[in-house]
Image (tube, rainbow, N blue to C red; front, side, top):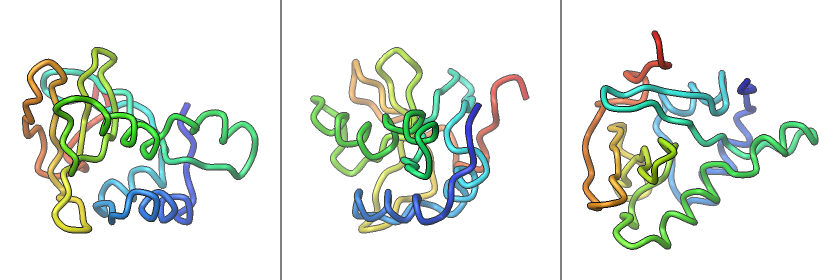
Length: 132
């Protein structure tokens, strides 16, 4: 069960990544930090934003957006301008793409086998939980 997250933790993630996150994503994570989202082709486990406000939250958010993005950027073919939002469990990543210091609002799937980027939503807010 995802927790909410305070804005200060989102700001810390932005500072660590050197970017500004899209407004719809920031609001969604403030309500439900992590969880699941669906695209037409797959269900995605969203990475949370690190939250060290208590031991339980810290334990549940250690493998969050920042470390998962840093790890993915070491993989062959992963775009250096991408921020990893989640995984389908099969190696593919749900990502935002940078435009300068801001992330574009569009959401893409990065296919690990082909390094292909597929646009799946015009905005993070367009995505819905599985079964909705």
